[in-house]
Amino acid sequence: MMKSIARLVFAGALLMSLGLTHPCSVNAGVNVNINIGPPPVYVVPAPPEVVLIPRTYVYYVPNIDVDIIFYHGYWYRPHKEYWYRSRGYNGPWVYIVREKIPVVILNLPPDYRHIPPGHTHIPYGQLKKEWKNWEKEKYWDKDDHHEREWKKEHHKGKGKHGGD
Image (cartoon, rainbow, N blue to C red):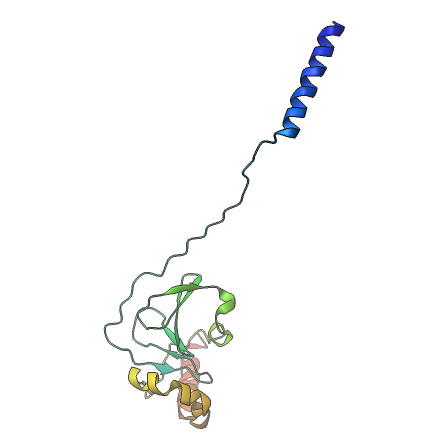
């Protein structure tokens, strides 16, 4: 019996020494792949007019079924809980993390799409040509007509619907 125990101890020691001199290679790794594809295709058939959102230099495309926003030379598009950005109003849309979205866009009023009557629609060509100058010169800060119309319509709507 002592010989059997001695053989087992010897065999165990031999196996352990082999394991130490010839370690097993273990491939352990973590691969997290989150595939967030682009939003569903929505084609704006012609260069869109935009509307200025008062107290911002953010513009949105009215009269379409999705939200497309212009700010600082980029177009932004929310879809579900994700945001996308593009250099063109029809994409290609690239996923953008929330931390990279300008704060002014994240803080837009929920009813920003409600356009009061008479509010100016800005042609695409004019936006493309002028947006940098408008920001640099604070153009919209000097012209409060848009904000007055927005407020007038907004207050009128609150009176009729109890603020809904």
